[in-house]
Image 1: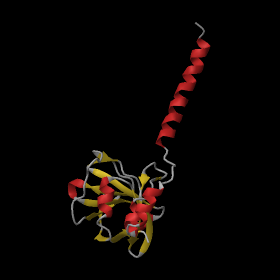
Image 2: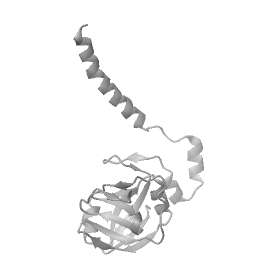
Image 3: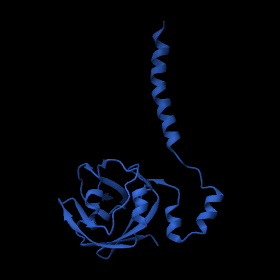
Image 4: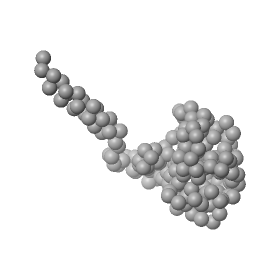
Length: 178
């Protein structure tokens, strides 16, 4: 048997599989007119949370634009489309006192426990991430790298520049974006 066709096939199959996966994961279709009509009758905060998911540079999907106020400075952020993030969004607006933890993150106690239905066992946070630490019922916001933590659920991400403001902040207000 001639090995040349097998070598050619061995090069093409992985590329075809990758293309198939990338195509299957992309959701570029516009919302249907029925869902657009339903969304237009809801309040503005509900409309934002029903928008189609977009992909952030880190590959995490986002569903709701929010605004953080850190010691008077406004920072844009997005929440992802997870059950935990939607439960968090239902609590907005929130104003919370921040405490530093491990010179990497600011934490704040939340008024109630959030749903972790369908959440992964833990997460590896990135600079700028907003997360829920379920064991302590706390919002965790990251201004430096931190290690994987069991019980951590990523809620969303701050826009560039937010982490620098977060590092010195003592209070955070979180609300739906205007």
